[in-house]
Length: 216
Image 1 (cartoon, rainbow, N blue to C red):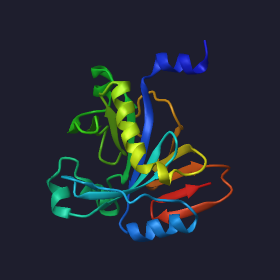
Image 2 (tube, rainbow, N blue to C red):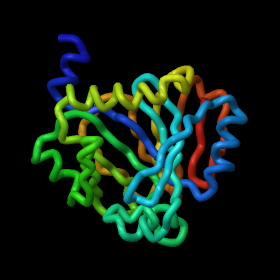
Image 3 (cartoon, helix red, strand yellow):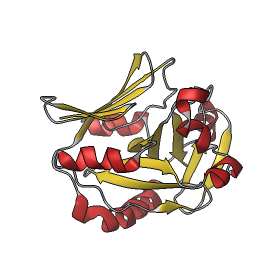
């Protein structure tokens, strides 16, 4: 049996995207664009008090996220304002999102559900303490998620990056609780909060913000 077929029997989830909340999106975007990366215009997240800009690869994408309305963020169950103020609150400023089908038993392994976004099909959950990266997982069927993905790609395809996302390195006080999944590996490293996106041959590295770097 081929590896891909075997993997499909073990897991029905795939890494969809990664995000990092930044305090100065203009400076973060300037550093990325200065190295040739192309960000899309992004969109506002109604009800969350946040906005994003994205880097797209063929299988995954990355979001720069920032707070645009503190009051709205405080009123939302996700409380991304706490994650934005991570240096003070100790909350993780990172997020990991998976697409595919998920069983009730697997959903419980993430911890308590905090938010449901029917439009995107994602269920946002937290595992362990707020120090852990924010995780989300879809309850939608693979076909439905594929349609959602194609709609998203349609708005971002002109901004697709060269190469692929090869590895995600998450630094923090504790390892994120993750389900079995396909896609680039997520590697935990103990230490102060930091997120590294590994693309290409690791010949160069760029610090994008206090907690974010891209390696290519």
